[in-house]
Image 1 (cartoon, rainbow, N blue to C red):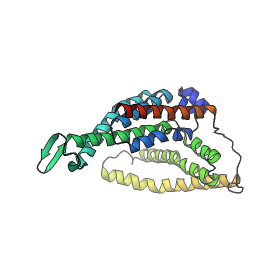
Image 2: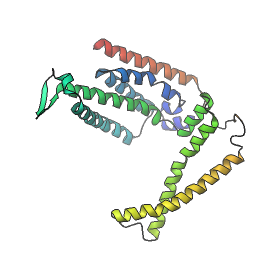
Image 3: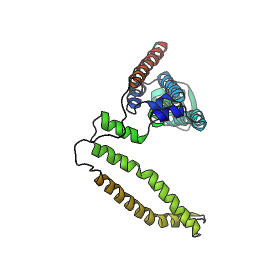
Length: 261
């Protein structure tokens, strides 16, 4: 993890995965219980700042965040606003009336608050999601949360099946193209390609599962209550510093917003 963090230049990559889940929890709770617009907006700005500084995402990811978040918030505000109860906000300004349906300004405000809460929760989750390797997360839960390694490493083995399946399906598609059956277009051709890929993909998955089972048996997996760890994911001083600083920043943002409101 240290090498990864040094290579990417973001300090979040070098933190323990559990810390990046524990640190945003108070901010998530503050966002969930809030009903105004200012609190989730302030927490969203805090999470976005932490991501940009600590994760050092690629230009494509930054562009996606800066363009996608306003779009998601806008669509969410309109959607939640349309489906809100007009009777609860009928004292506000009437914007649109179509037959019996009426859209008030208060409905859009409530929809905007809900959309901002979802966006803030998403960004807080991305602090760990964009900077954490799945293998390190499983190892950390086994080492520090005392999750039984039989459960943790079984989940890790299943997690590693996903790239294997992706590789196998690419090989199958290449084989279909070589045989002249992969270049056709249309719904019928797509169904034929899918049905023609199911059997070889299933056979490859069974072979891979057998190899994984043999490798785990050769390493005496499950024979003892504990196992030694080849890759350690320790808790360091910087993990505690990040957690405390993030909690203080969250409290300062929430208190400042409440004082301003």
